[in-house]
Every structure is written in structure tokens, then in C-alpha cells.
Image (tube, rainbow, N blue to C red; front, side, top):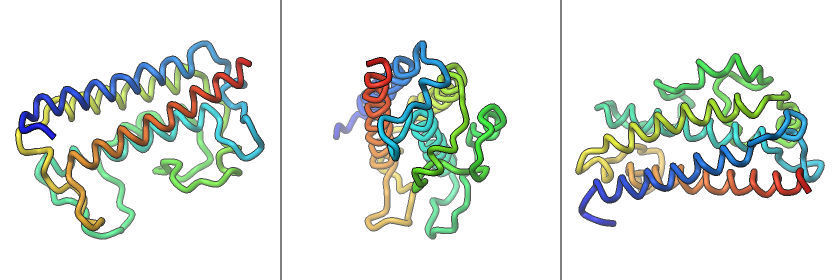
Length: 187
């Protein structure tokens, strides 16, 4: 890792921009029915994959921003929801049968199957909002922010750099899965 945080932030921003472009392509031109097609009876569909990657990124970036704003990092698994998520403004547009703060983590195949028909523009719009928030947080990193502890619930405690790489890794995997399913849907 470089000693120049602006270099590190620019690399992270580039990675998140690539995810944004891939999300846009994954949903482009697909109907709500196509977005719900599952390649197998227990597989994830594009709508759920894009919603899930956006929800996790929204949740984790909000938590990161909360700590970087001077608040204490979480130290126990209390299940508290980090403040500052964009999800409350988007939740009504999705009409999900899940808990208010669900991110998709650990959901069953049946829960994935219960995801309602959602249009591509809603999925893309939520992700665009999350991406803009991510770019603002990453773009505003100070010199020593990447090494700050942002989560004490793990051993070793998680730094901002590790959390950002974790988010980027997770979103890259899920958008790749969505691209794969798109290829199957379009045959």
C-alpha cells in the first residue's frame, strides 16, 4: 500500500466506478420478469444480486463514514444499524417482504424467491445513489484515515482500508454473478 492516500483513494474510486458501470450494464434493457429469472431453482437472480450488493455497500459505507466522523467503532455484535444509510429513502420503492434493515446477508433461497418484481431503473437508481455516497466518502479520505480502526468486532480489528477492500471485493463478485445470469437470461 502506498504512503500517498490520494493514490490509494484514486485506486479505490476507480474500482468502485468499475462496479457502477457493471451494475448499469447488468440491468440494462431487462424487464422486471427477466431480472427475476433464476438460472436454477435455488440460484440468485439479477434483482436480488444488485439489491444485495447495493444494500451491503450502503450499510458498510454508512458505518465507515460514521466512524470517520469521530464516532467510536462498533465493539460488539449488537445488531445496531449504522446511521446515515440511503436505504430508508429507497425502501418504499422496493416493497420487500424482508425486515426494514435487511441486506440480504444469510438469506435463504426462499427469501430470494420472494423478492418482488422491480424495474431496472429502480435497481440502478439505488445503486447510483449508493455509489455517489461511496465516492464522496472515499474521495474525502484524509492521510491517516485508511489505517483507522473502523470495526473492533473482528480479530484483528478492521481498518478503513480493509473494510473498503472488503466492500469492493464483495460488490465485484456479486456484479459478476449478475452479469453471468444476464448472459443466461438473454441466451
